[in-house]
Length: 235
Image (cartoon, rainbow, N blue to C red; front, side, top):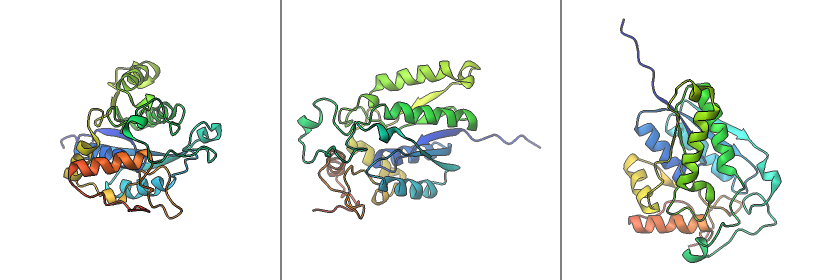
């Protein structure tokens, strides 16, 4: 009997937000067997994990792992420390000026390290992450230089890398505008109504519409010429 080829495997970092779900759709569209990885790290917008679970099921992932991390205990971010106010109503100029208080120290480094460990165990050579260098709102760990540096480190620091595996960090949204991302997701069939991007949702999970994440998202939908189907507390 002919040998059955094994599917290409990938680990996808899945927050449940617009970008990560689009990346999940891209990976599945390219034929990858996906191992989705999400994190409960003390984030205030924990509603995103509910969206991540539903999207993982919708896109037929091989497994969906949710890791509990302690980085929220360190504080230093409005996303993990209730004493730090989430910025509201900032202009584009204000968003692009420096690193915002919603930056979680070393978050993407920690996330990718866990994704790398899962990839080694599952035999995946590709790690997908939804970082963006255009609408990235000042986060240093979303820059192309960071992704390239982490990929180089991964090939040096892992058994699979030293044995010749072509470990690759895939950031397909890196050079896309938010409008481009929305268009691509809609083309692939993403249900954006069941994605959660807001940094400061109300107790029911409705998005605030005014934090940086909401404003960038709403702008993307507007420029794409479609209505954002997410649930907002205002407007």
